[in-house]
Length: 307
Image (tube, rainbow, N blue to C red; front, side, top):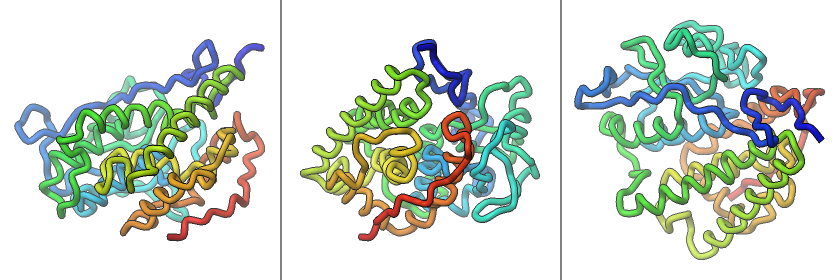
């Protein structure tokens, strides 16, 4: 059977695999003058969607590092159409307070008039040069933990050097098999591509369940960026990935250790307030018309994230 069209035809491989586009903006903020972007309070603005796990992780790191008054942020409408992420007034989202853009694409084309790819969040805007610096959540999290951290109110080192190698390896595994794995399942356009993605996803979740059997967090008692990388997928899993993306061999609630871990992270100070299940469910079920053409948003599931 031939591959279906897919949600993002430009990112669908011939074998039916979802092949995520590369991030277009990868410049860095530096304190040595090697780039045009110097660390400064109030200079940078973070565009996010509360629905998006990649943007969610950047928001969490910004909060944990005490950077909320250093780097401003605004939230796009969770319902995205063919024009991309939009700035509209609504519950939990609103107009662009920095540039007055109607669509996030305007920030992309202002930064690169030749840009023709898919507009993604998070995106870090520089008020000084009036352009995007970076739209890679990995880079943005490291900028918040690194060069911008002295401007904030402190917070834990989310990339501790003593576990750098092991952390990088586990983060990469989680990215490939879990964070992006749910998308490779949901956006697959052949049965074989879907099954490969789902089996790899659940093999990895099984290993993470075992790993958490003798430790509180992924690296023991301390919480690092890798934990938040995993959290942002886990907290969306039973609500959308299990049904919408057909990742339905098991739910997270069926994993005792992963569910315990999810609840513990969710109830840390300030974390729950940025988990918006209305945005999450409306984004996935309304936006992905190739997967859910009716646009009907399910009432369930009933989630229990109590401590």
